[in-house]
Amino acid sequence: MRVLFGILLVIVATICYADCEPQALTPAIETEPQLLIFVSLSMPEQSLKLWAQQAEKIKGKLLLKGFVDDSLQATIDETLRIFKEPKADFLVHPEAFEKFNIDKVPAVVIANPDNCLEDDCPVPAFDVVYGDTSLEDALNKIASDGEHHQKTASDFLSLYRRSHD
Image (cartoon, rainbow, N blue to C red):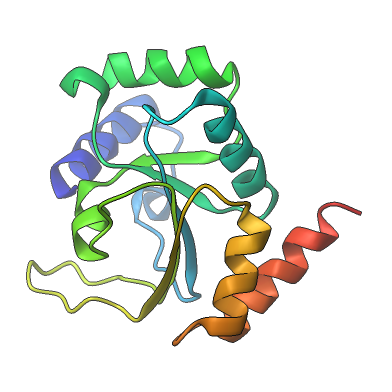
C-alpha cells in the first residue's frame, strides 16, 4: 500500500507540478470512524452495482483485495465495463482485508480511523457484517448488535435513509 501511495503521489506530483499547493499532496488524516465495504469484482455484477450505489450515497469506500490478473489496467477496464461511470470510491487494499481478517465478501466494516504508518500497528476497533444483504440491513445489524460502533452505525443509517428522501 505504501508503494501504491508513493506511485500515486508521484503521478499526482507529475500531473500538477506547477499548479498544486504542497498540502494537496499530503494524505488526509482520518478522524471519524470509516465505513468500508469489502467486495470482489468476481461477485455478481448486479450485486456489485447495488453495493456501489449504496456506498456512493453515504461516501462509503469499496475495497478490493487485489488487481484483476495482477494488472492495474485490467482492473480499471473491468471496473469500467461493469460500472461504466463509477461514482463510488474503489480502493485496492489487500492490507485492510488482512487487518480486519476479511475472508469472504461482501463484508461491511465500521472501524476507527487507522492513521498509523508503522508496520506493527494495532487493529483499530471495528464491527463487521458479512453477506449479500443491503447496506441498510448491515448498518441496522451493527447499530443493534455491534460491539464498538453502534452510534456510528446509527448515524450512517440516518444519513443513508435521508439520501432516499
